[in-house]
Length: 290
Image (cartoon, rainbow, N blue to C red; front, side):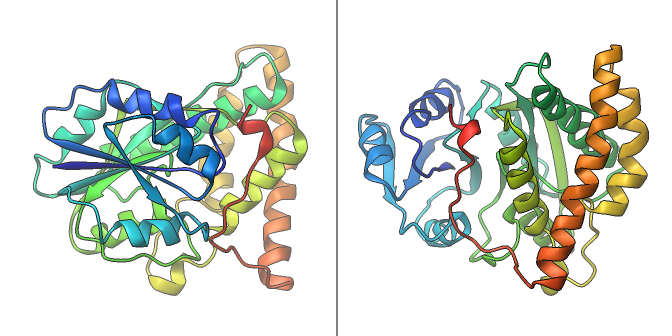
């Protein structure tokens, strides 16, 4: 059996699309679809779908909810996604990747829904295409460790619990990697995501994402940081500069460098100086919900 878990928080406007996208997939294996959400508005939408189970999330955060669900799901393979995104009809390819007994974890490919004609829309495409997709593709070809995307990834149902103060899409893959399993990237399986369209939300989201990776070595001292300031500088600079196809896009790319530097400085100050660490709590980025 395949267990598909959709975690959601105050997303009644998008959860229906997320559910319907999953149900459109013709997966050969038996599946169960579970939506976890703490709010009544999202729950009311979920309960309209007879083929979907609703799980009352206590509202303490995504990882907290997942730890409860790990004890309840029946599938041999777990596929995780979110209530404000939607997948394409290729989920079978993620399932098929586990036919190799050496594969423990598989990531799909996030694709930005934002238009490239705006600066922040362009940023989302650049960071995903020239950044995440390019790096994951290279690491996958080299059979090296890669971090998954929290928007869509899957793993064998052997995880009993995960820490709530780090990114689950980095910690879980490394748990399998340390056990000798492969972590694979299947870019044909896409998840469509709306990213922030203004400066305030862009900074807020990126700082939170970066902070969620700061304490990974607390649990695994040999964790190979794929996402970090120096790796971004070393691996991302040339890819970013080679990405634009117009003069306007090139100027926007140049604008992104000082913005990313500001974000990394903010992360350093918050985590190292003021000891304001990442916590597992639901936090909305409003411009990604409309």
